[in-house]
Image (tube, rainbow, N blue to C red; front, side):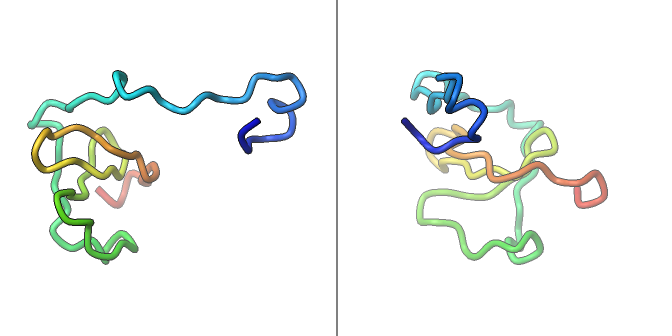
Length: 80
């Protein structure tokens, strides 16, 4: 069983990893690109990816498809 909090593991309700089909492309007007990743404690984005803020979350987006590849963390209101 995957690593998760002990309570969920005991109950057999470990969260399942997201399925490929559930990955979506956010509307472009909701995406705020990050020009200086170091501001958020990030290094350079991997080739073909970019960092952005979408709905108050720091995310990594595929340059070609525009799909969110990973949600890194929620950002406090003052950072964005």
